[in-house]
Every structure is written in C-alpha cells, then in structure tokens.
Length: 136
Image 1 (cartoon, one colour):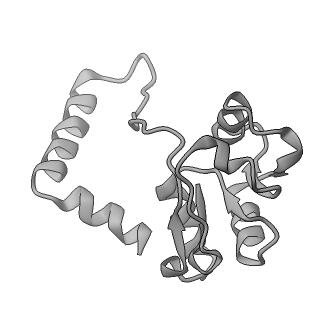
Image 2 (tube, helix red, strand yellow):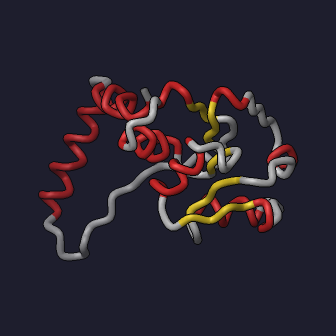
C-alpha cells in the first residue's frame, strides 16, 4: 500500500485499511483481489484501468492510498515526473517473489544464461542498486 507521506497514513493491521474509503486499485489486479479477500469493502475501492491512472489519482489526492506492487508503483510515480520521495509504503499486503516465464520451446542455454546473469547481479549488489533507482 503506497500513500503520500504528507497524508501521515500509518497502518499496522488489515482492519485499519477499512478506515479509508478511497483506496486506489487497478481493476482486477492482485491488489484489488487481495483487499477484497481480506474483507475490505468493495465500496472503499476506487478502480482504474492502469497503474499510471491510479498514480495520477494518488498525486491529486483523489485516493488515500494505492494497492500495488511497491517497485512498479514507484516506477509509475517516477515516470509521471512526480517525486518518489513524496510517497511511502504504508503497509505490505503480502511479500512475494518475482519470476520469469519462458515459452516451453525456449532453449535451456538461454534460460541458464539469464539465470547466471541474475545471480551475478544479486551477488554483486547491482540488482539492489537497479531496483533502488525506481524507488528514489
């Protein structure tokens, strides 16, 4: 959950999320689905068609916060020319890993090369450095 720092939103439990009546979500996205599964009323959710649109709503204070993946949310904010430093993650709905999927006919050598490159980026700290450029 991402919000403007200036709003001073602090959330410690899912129940506290229901206090907010304008939560931005991308229609049918995992953020919307998770909030509904956690018991957040649909009437509290403001649906948009894309992360870019939801980021604009957040910037204009039309939503209190936004349920979206942290890195992609901050990337959208940055792409729109907004200052990522004005925003913060106020709650994590769920931690998850990111994966690559390949066509079943992809050569195993291609997959191995990508995995080796990713492992190297992780081990030398470059991956964290790259990800941080989207958050600041």
